[in-house]
Image (tube, rainbow, N blue to C red; front, side):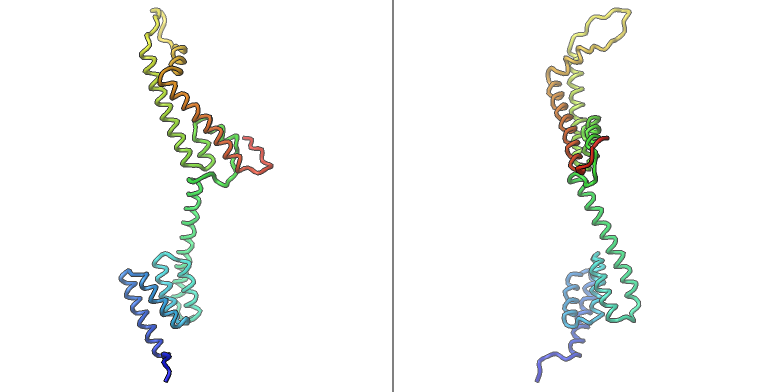
Length: 232
């Protein structure tokens, strides 16, 4: 007497597994439902009900590509089930949406993590960083570095202005005639820039400026081809 299960027993077992999987899906326990549905497919790979339920579970979990495969397989096994066409369309839309999201995430990470693969002009990148440190990095696609440099520039510029103002305020004013209005003492401003605490901020500001210009130009030049001039 054979111990092999009969076809009727296999079908009953598949219905039992799919029934339990459907209940688990309704309760939100999709991973457990996937396991039971896979067991049903292992028992009979030609069970279109199992493939359809597997597709439903994958679609619930946002896996449009896997759902599409299961729905197509279910349609091959049962071409008379019209609802599969609608489910195939929904799975295709979910897959396209996921691919778009992945592409956007990749582009965002490229922009935040390092230079873009788009060709950049070294001259333009250097000029932008000459105007404001960090602009050249933003042009190159180095978003985080660009914002950090711009923030440091603003901070150092502010510290320099505060230190310079304090130095000038502490310096005795020169006598002025009654007929002359207020005038800008360039000598006091220059001496203030290179004395005391303001000199430290000026040196750091200059180093940041020079580094930003050089870095922007070098990074941009790496995106150019051998026949590109890099001229603005």
